[in-house]
Length: 494
Image 1 (spheres, rainbow, N blue to C red):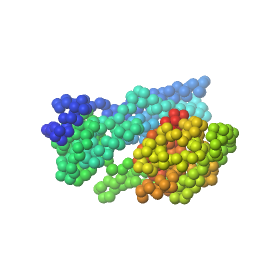
Image 2: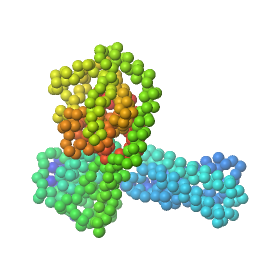
Image 3: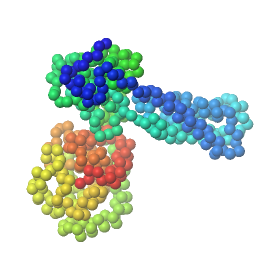
Image 4: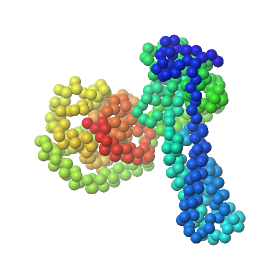
């Protein structure tokens, strides 16, 4: 297979930028599959620690040889429970459910063995054996969870280096996703554009951040070896179909390189994705978002109960803040404003006043200083002259939002949800963006814990829609936990 320079003037410039020269092959680092054996070793050590814990917690009771056999059987129980499945995809996953299931498997197997062959107990009473079995099963599950949590320290997590293959617009979109401010799972090192690219699309003059190669069929394996890639991400198009994917999958498997196919979906939670068959074809199933039903009803009850409790506990603090605002500047302490709630219903939101009473009247004088890039939909200024001294402190720690607990208690808002929108914003919504109104707005949400006012309008909208489509209890708990650190760090609060 001959390696060509590809895209004319782009390839040399991209190679120079990446520090890779023609003729130099970068050795591939150990793949994630190699970490699987390390995880098995950690589980075995965890089981040994659990066996020692069992011996310490049962003084005066001899440790039967049978339990040494159980120790060796622990990795087998973990495997039966699915603790090592899909290890090549994410060896750093702790898989708590599988480890707990493995504990139940080992306890059940041990009791069954002792029932059939009681002579292996070395004279222990049934009660002593039951206690020791339960202790070992529970301790093994717990210590394995702890051992797997330490895996990033033993072998630090690194993103998989990938070669992106597909039409230029889709590949550029994947490069943008790889550069989003989050912990990256993949690091693109090169791009292969198919031959059909030049027949159907006109290449742009926008520079590429990685090396670019023209022609997949003749270049793919050499590019993978040249940059030491761990995986190849393919976006199917007119020139990349079933035959090409099957052929490349075989080639890449022989080189211990993973093949991933992009379905052109984004911001869809793992729990909503599945697979299906259409004859011999494989389909990606996207399960519907949970917009109603018992889960949402329970969420509403939890919201109101928590809001009532917080209002009761925070009543003295709310009163103190009210007095501080009144003493700092003339005007009411609470600010009321019409916002748009679930299904487009307007409601009056409550907040502590952080600006002068004439803030809305002088807004048009500050329009040229608007730092939001949302084309007028949002109005944000980092050093807004309308903000009072107490207001600046309240905004810094998001204390101005506390009166919204009243809205939560009334059922107009939720503790966690999209940002409550202004009527002017909603009138500027596109049909797709109106979807964020199918749930109650929240006091905190993905927007608030991911940068708040430092985010662009497009990023804010994307996070709100991501929350709506992927709501779950675990997502709410995660946002609630991140809210604490976001408030303490007060990043993007102005």
